[in-house]
Image 1 (tube, rainbow, N blue to C red):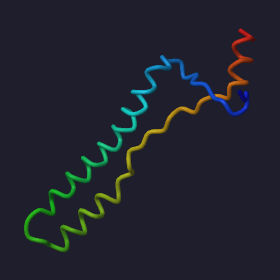
Image 2 (tube, rainbow, N blue to C red; image 1 turned 180 degrees about the horizontal axis):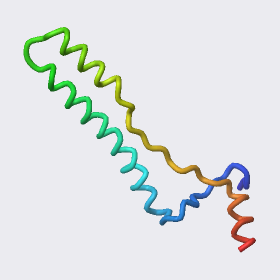
Image 3 (cartoon, rainbow, N blue to C red; image 1 turned 180 degrees about the vertical axis):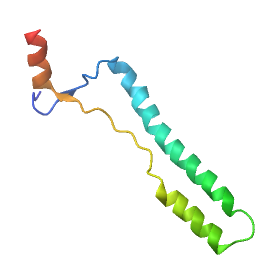
Image 4 (cartoon, helix red, strand yellow; image 1 turned 90 degrees about the vertical axis):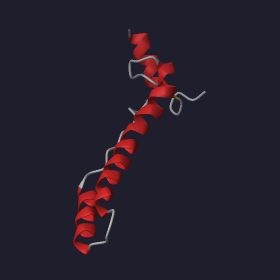
Length: 86
């Protein structure tokens, strides 16, 4: 066991719930991005028009993509010393 390379989840919530919550939190932004693209592309249905196509592309590219990042785990050595300190 390496105190420098092994990490522990110290976020403060139940560590077992991370298995489901990390997956769920990754799903939400991807779903929001797909929904935004689908709504923007519905304007292109029908007869193709160059000005509509360009406007839709600008609308899709102009929005910042939704994202989520996991709170980083702490090295085991830091966790052990902080728990010993009280």
